[in-house]
Amino acid sequence: QVQLVESGGGLVQPGGSLRLSCAASGTIARINRMGWYRQAPGKQRELVATITSGGSTNYAESVKGRFTISRDNAKNTLYLQMNSLKPEDTAVYYCKFDTWRGTYWGQGTQVTVSS
Figure 1 (tube, one colour):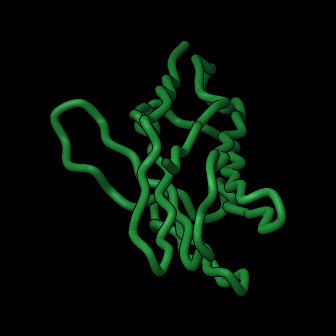
Figure 2: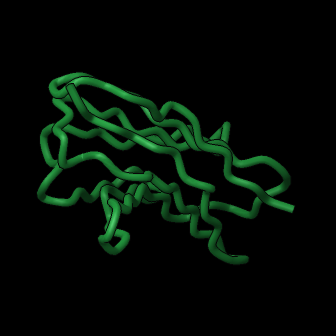
């Protein structure tokens, strides 16, 4: 049974930084694309950033220049470095792993940006 375990969320002031992590437990097939998504109250889940097995990245326009996605293939772990956080970044953040055997989601971690 594969599970994705997220960590690193919390409360931060505007302009601050957080680093999210997402680690896979259990035996997981080769991971192709990894990504971070977020869902704010009353809104649909949206893509934040993705990274392929080769390291190609893609970002939502709203986070470009502020967030950095990275992965450690040896550890099956995904990261999201978030800098210059804004109140509109407040949401539950989810990680997602795409493998040839299926897609897996994390349980979500709350990020709150407020003074």
